Length: 423
Image (cartoon, rainbow, N blue to C red; front, side, top):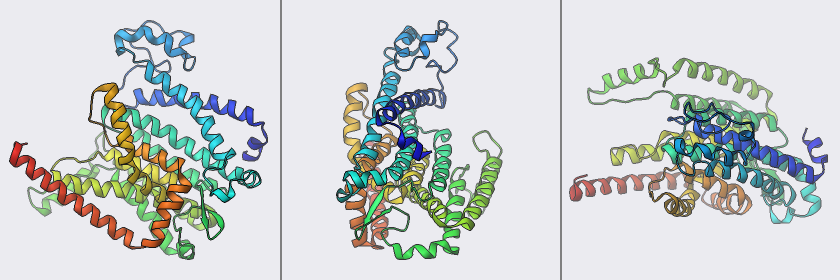
């Protein structure tokens, strides 16, 4: 499939990708309005609002169809059609440009490999990387704008997205779904154990199996309804805790989660038995899932305890877990620390447009991910992995120390606010 795609003229590939971009933009628009908590009947691919005029065939023409839907302004608000039209247009232009950036210029490769002969040789690999990023970008577009609208990220985006990432990681095999790392002059796909290749063999044994199943178990557990009520003592707390896990309500489908965990554990065991690049790819995605979601989860717990209120939505945890599954733990950590930098631009633009300074954290994470992906060689391979090679295990202790310091600072900030302002 990839070999056939590469044989097509580049002009034809770019045109096809523009069409794919429009379709993915339309799908993202559908998700933004239909998967939101407060679903709205906006867009040509959803049922029309009962008070809206009948839909026309021309409404379903990508990008241009939104001009016709302006007639529904009295129902959906002034200029409601501008954003979805721009999303489709941006995807139509941006996807071909990103394909050129990844596969034709080799910008994800180290500078020494950005020569025509090397780029041509790496084109199958970079095509797999591009396809993986294409899926991730589409999911992040939907998650970002739902988060803008409602300050929540639906599981209907992050759970299927994470599962897709795990499947992609298994199917990529020798054509890795992750970009490259220049390891002592040898170009290799970034994997979970890098930059320490000597550790790879132990992960093909029991350590790898238990790590993969453990991360999968924690992720499935995280998606369940978890409540720890301490006001009646620790014994009652655990009783309520386990009761809440199995309480059969629409927002807590524990039976489906249990089935997903069992099926996933069996598949992980099968892939572990297959071994080779398939197992390394799956474990890379699982560790990316665990690190990406775990970092945000830890900060969420510390912040919530210090502030005595929810410091960060759990949708941010599942979003970062999905991102980590797509780009690996190295890219996930880099994306998380780039998020505050991206926030500066996002807050400014968002405030100018809406006059609202309160923005959820999800768009920051998505923007930080894009920065990591676009600057992969310089940021992830160069800065992050370079410092990781120097700091080694100390990096984990540094993160724990910084998280603790953040908790202490938030605690004193809460106490100060309560003392001075009575909030």
